[in-house]
Image (cartoon, rainbow, N blue to C red; front, side):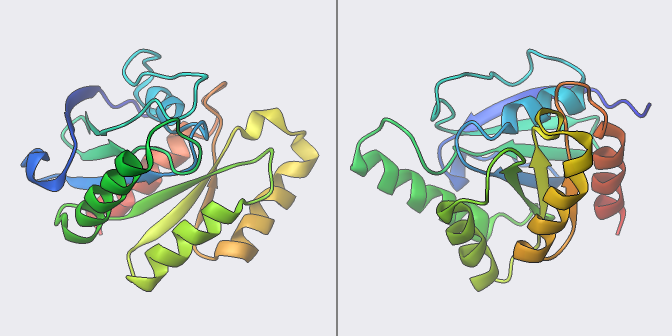
Length: 191
């Protein structure tokens, strides 16, 4: 199995604080508790590299992870539920938009969808925003291990029908799709 070493680099609130690395970057978009931190931990094969929580809205900064000097993953605050003030949410939105629209290293955005639930209104809103700016994006369907094997292809094809583009299944529990995702990311980096 392809293994990449991963290191947490830095947290940044806004674009001006982001690290100056030459590597392709993949920001993670998704609702709170969709499994972005677990995705990072599974790819890194290290359960402690990104902090996971059962409390939604714990990620409040852009957290950068370097994967073997091949690419960077930027874990963004989840959209949707978070117990913070409207002012704080407005500030996050402003800083995240600035980052997503102006960060030169971004190769593709990755939007996360929870396999156990229908695509939510805020998932569609995020996708519309991304498409309005014509940003590159693909989708990762997380928590695939929580649905029966016979339903996986139906869930994947539904997300593909709704969003289009490439859709990859993912399980942080058994790391079954890690190699496919790493191959996919390395492919994007090299093209």
